Amino acid sequence: MDTAPTISALSVLSAMITPAVLISGAGTLLLSTSNRLGRTTDRVRTLTARFKVLVTPEGRAAPLAREEKRLILSQLPRLSRRTRFIQRAMQSLYLAVALLVGSSIWIGGAALLGEAGEASHAAQRLGPVLLAIAGAGALAYGAVLLSIESTLSAATTREEMRFLERLGNHYAGLLED
Image (tube, rainbow, N blue to C red; front, side, top):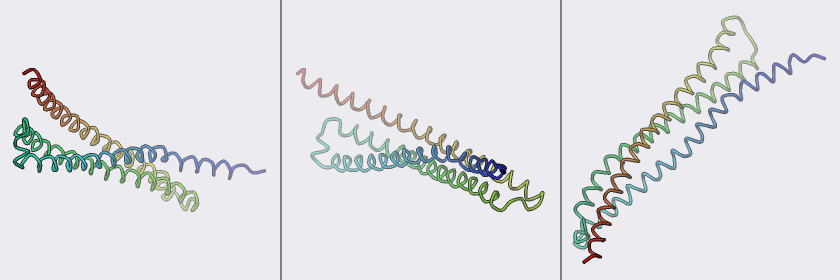
């Protein structure tokens, strides 16, 4: 009984599945990144609606209305930067998935087509590895972009919390009178 084809097929399948681990990681990051983009978009819409209220006569009479308008205007550029980082991260993550899937397809295709000469053999071995390295690099780049975006997110949250503390102190002062 000849087991060489079975072993070869198993090693090809194993090699094809290896990029799937990174693809799965990229997919998880894509899902969370898409959610981050949605939350950022919702935040811009919320701030826009609040700003529209603050510019009305009733809104201008709200406690700390001027300060809140300044807060909103200072957050919009950060939200714009966050959106750009998220968009670039998503592009990078989609590229990572494409490269990693391409690597897996190349491994499978090379196994199906067999070796057609020594030059082809080198390309069959090196090509998928280069694609996988490029895919891993794109995945790492996307993760770096998301790290930067999360820092921006934390900064805007801290700024808003400082404003809410001032607003709370304002109302606490009213209660003492």
